[in-house]
Image (cartoon, rainbow, N blue to C red; front, side, top):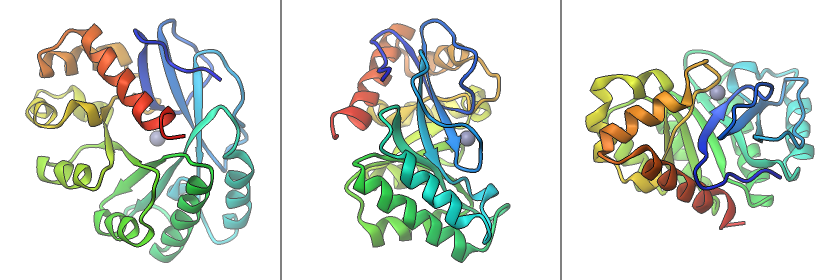
Length: 228
Ligand SMILES: [Zn+2]
């Protein structure tokens, strides 16, 4: 299993596992409907989950069983992305049921959950309250307001920012206002350079890129390795 080394850039959420970049540890988020399977690939770790966009009544059982079978793979550090989407995806009920099933799998394997959440914060918070997970959740692709970010963090969750949002000058205030020990950075497979994102965020925080690497490295260990 590839663990990041201190000094690596960590791309906590991407969708590719082919082009390795020296000095970058990427977490490839495998979606259960894809042909891909996790395994040892230098420079990469994986998550496995059911993305709500690609879930429907007829593939539900198959996708859940794939997550179930794959979650204990040593290259899989979390379950997800999983969650809720009001814009695209199946019924709210199927999304909720499938999300809960994935949370149970994550708890059983002592792995965190990576969350996809679009305009469904009530659903997410309700599920968190109902399930009371022991493993922490990481909301990826965040691009909301400071109050929402605070609300997410107050539930013990972590945040990773949407790659476009994080590069905007307007996001600097939000980034500065959050506890640095709860944040992650990601490209989401967009082709954006993770190094550019680190540059922007280190300037926001008033730290060097090396200092930011250390912060995110510690966050990684806190979230993904110490609790297992
Ligand atoms: Zn994604």
